[in-house]
Image 1 (cartoon, helix red, strand yellow):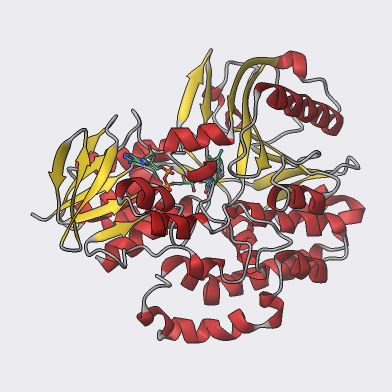
Image 2 (tube, rainbow, N blue to C red):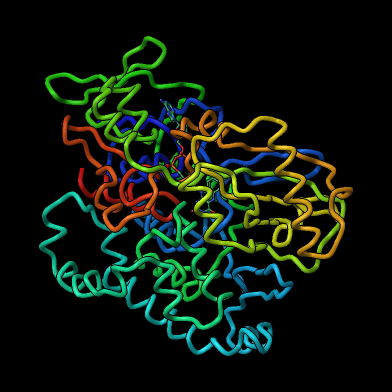
Length: 484
Ligand code: FAD
């Protein structure tokens, strides 16, 4: 039986372990942490349960594909449901609405001001679907580092869309051309943050993301986001995957330009294939001791990072739903501060996720578990005074936006800083999604899923092609399994 070693049990590492085990490999996974899932983790405190990282579940089809590859049915491991609304939006002028799937309900929720653009929203989502089906899929499901991708029928079909001037523009310009109302522009601009980028720089191709959320849908997995990790763990164990926790890989052993194993705590573990789920920049720096290639990765712009407050709230807030956004007043300034000035925005957009809305056991009765996040630059080191100031600002903005007092309601608090993200999962500079997609060529510059230096060495996860976020990490694992 051929043997594969996977370095890291993030979503990408778990997915590739499952795919390789299903292909007949004996798979051993090492993770430096005492838990699986990497950034997708959970903690419990005083009756509250919090998912620590990803909170949005889209594209279950990619999970279905993974479980099918192992001859299993996803819902037997991870029951999940389609939600009737994706998000509740709050604007600085106190306008707010819930983005329902149902058109009539949405129309009712919008109010006169936003209803005017509803036909434009419909046509935008229809063209997002077309763009995804013709060009988007190519970017996320295929390797961009193999000639065969470019000479496929799919690539020929995608080409006119990729070269169309409206798709060569930025996401913001595209949105401005599509909607009269600034609120819709801001709403659709926000999808740039789904891979940690700026709408004023990221290509208009990112307009495919709303298709995934609004046409296909927003879902909620049983057990919250960590339910995903538990389901993957169960399947991996059934397939015979062996997990070695609290074990940090120190080196990838190279012999005659071949990856042949890893070193963990001075012990050598040999394998036919080595797959790194560690951040690609740090894989070069620490595991391959290759400073030149580390510097090459280091030059690429990082995606945004985040500052998260996990608050146990001693009350319920009916105006909020599972996903909520409180928009900032000056959106362009916010992204300039993050990407051009390396600063935490003075007036940040605030995201509040409350899993207890869908999973009541995640909080004591008449309480809620709030995950409150703002985007920050990657690599920023915030001290306690700065964090306290930001917290005060966030509380004021929420109180202003929701017209309720919240500070006295916070009974549990934990904080995750960009530095924590870096330390917890060895994510370079605490970037949430690896490298940013702030230019037309970002997708092509992202690192490949296989090594061009060494045979039998592969890469999965959010820092390599096709990029960060759960659906893309799953695709990186599929590309590796197909390539290998
Ligand atoms: P990671 O999660 O980065 O895990 C890597 C693993 O490798 C870790 O477990 C680490 O301990 C281990 N490791 C590293 N080096 C070694 C070594 N040398 N030896 C052994 N083990 C090692 N994505 C979404 O899709 N939706 C969201 O809503 C969303 N929100 C987010 C919110 C936050 C706060 C964060 C932090 C991220 C969010 N993301 C979201 C991004 C998403 O979490 C990541 O893109 C994805 O989880 C990355 O998975 P990965 O496979 O790259 O591995």
